[in-house]
Length: 222
Image 1 (tube, rainbow, N blue to C red):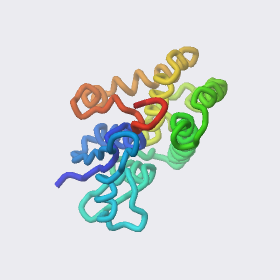
Image 2 (image 1 turned 45 degrees about the horizontal axis):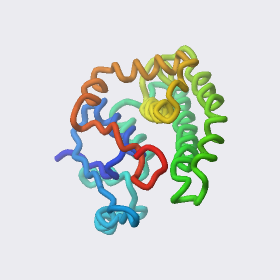
Image 3 (image 1 turned 90 degrees about the vertical axis):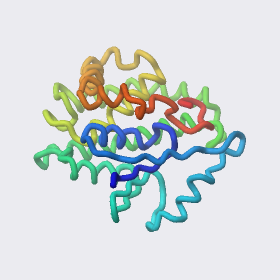
C-alpha cells in the first residue's frame, strides 16, 4: 500500500514534501482536507481524523507509511531525506542542509505571519507587507550568498533543503514579482530545479498544486 500524506488542500507546509516524494518517485496517496466556508472556516474534516491519528502530537502535515506515522513537516522531510538518499553524502553537506532548513523555517514563519495579519494577528496587512518588503532584499541576498556558485544548497548534490528553498523562493517571487532578478544564482537555482525531469513531470500533472498557497482566511496566497 502507498504511504499517505495528509494536509490541507493548499501548498503551505506540505508542498516541499510533495516535491520530495515526486522527485524520489515514491507512490503516495494524499488526503487533502478542506476548511468550511467563511466566516467560520471550520476544520471539522481534519479534526475528525486528528482524533484517530494515534500519535502524541497529532498535527498536519502527517505522513503514514505502514505502522510509521510522522507529524511535523521538517521531521517528515528528514525521514524522506534518509529514506531516499537526499541528506548529503558527507557531514559537511548534512550540516549545510540542516542549517538552511532551519533558516527557511524561520523565514517561512515570519512570512506567514505577514500573510495572516488580519485574521490571526489583528494587524494591518498593508503595513506589515511594506515592512516585510523592506527586509526582503537582505533576506534574499543571504540565500544568494549561502548558495554561492553551488548548484544546490549543500554543494553538487540535491538535498531535502533544496525543496524547501525552491518553495520559499517561489512564494517570494509570487508575492513580489522581480525580487530575484538581481540575484542570478537564485534565478538559476529555480530554473534548474524546475528543469529536473521528475519536477517537470510533476509540475505539469494534475496532482501539482499551484494554488492556493495558504488557507482561505489569509490576506495573500488564497
